[in-house]
Image (cartoon, rainbow, N blue to C red; front, top):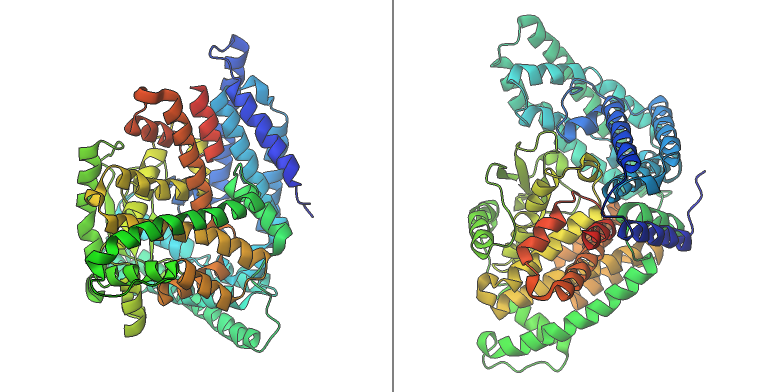
Length: 591
């Protein structure tokens, strides 16, 4: 069993690495250049082996050389994976960190963290055992079907080859699942029911209309029938499991302090410890309440004419926000309203010269595929990897047809005319879509591939503030109050995740915090609770990354004074791929 690394040792290691980066020489001796070249050859070899060992991951990042292969997640595969990570960790340990340039030092640390994290997941955390939602073939087949990286017939042949493995895939899944949580079992049910649609009429029409041979079409029909039977068999297995778990004996979704601290260290790679981030979030919540009270008092005469002002400041803020929330799109127009707002964001970023854009990298707003629904996030980005950077980036928006009328009304009040714009900034421009487009242009494949969630989510939150600071929506107090509420959500995400997973925070108390102290609508709060039962640590990434990026921006702005450029900072920050903020900060300070 892999033992947790004490947090003081993690902090010490981080400090040593950052100090080494800052102390890097501006000129590089010939021996160091040779070491860098040798390291790059090593990286190239490791990545090449990775694509063969993990073909689905290769396909997701745009490397399609092994797109016809499918992994069966059985015990033998887990053993091979652990051996892969151990072998390459041993190799990395033999490389002299001090001999490398600053960029390569970061690459080495990212590879080390990635391999240690994956090995820990397989040997200690074991989500493959207690999270049935780990198993879902829909997404990887969806990439082959929807990404035009090759002629349709070539991609369909890849689909046929992979279909042969689907029955074994789900047989391995059923064999691996042990003592699962009820929540992850229910999520697996929702998403695998959605996966069935991947193998349905649309795919069958593509095959029928293709130039595949008669024998190939017959092979597809047979394998597709077997694949659907395997998915249905897994759904039946999960349904029986759900019934049993509802009667008692389900594993708790809470992972506890020790596992949480280790997962936080691997996933967030922050300069904060869990406790430090928790305390910072609690203080930030109070600061946001102070600022929101001031704006709510300013807006009261405009929106609440003739009504008495509540003495309780949370009631005051809530009253104004509730009045603003009445301005929203219609239920049936939700997806189209988002689609229509994207060009305006592009134009504002261009006119204010905030960050480089690239119109050759397409952004497509689509309804969230069924196999991705049910996880509690109503909007997300699916971006191509660095090997296929000009493929479509998809902005996934879940339509509201799964909600009751009351739930949909609550959801639309949450995503009102102001908040919906902030959502689109966060997910699309200049948020996730823009950041991931820049990441694919990074000179370092390692920094692009081994993405850090806190950097990615932190940038999306930071980009919202960049837009408002530049005068978005004419700097109206309505947009600022809406943003403060939205930003409070990131803060509350951190508080909730830590307290739910490590302090036994109960559902009723969590909902009260979200509705009373974060001013969320009931549907939003309920969906967030569900999401918090499915994931661990990820909800802290928004605030952790935002806090670190903001601190770095403020530091460099003070240092550079009149020479500071918003666009210059943003472009330079984004040029380092998806590396953790603490490493990007070290590289930017040293440049």
